[in-house]
Length: 67
Image 1 (cartoon, rainbow, N blue to C red):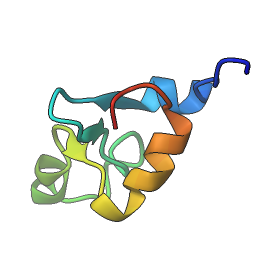
Image 2 (cartoon, rainbow, N blue to C red):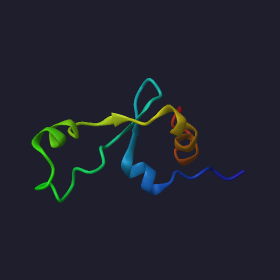
Image 3 (tube, one colour):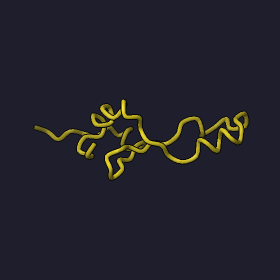
């Protein structure tokens, strides 16, 4: 059997934490920031985890990562 390939897009966008959860960046914080409130932009800071319902898709996109 050939090795399973990791999706290149997923490799760039997600990181697997030691506990097996997946870290992702926040959406809606890259551009058109002038119309967003300061409070909204502040809450978009930092990384968040992938929702548990999406972990099956993460395991398919990132095989061999311990998910």
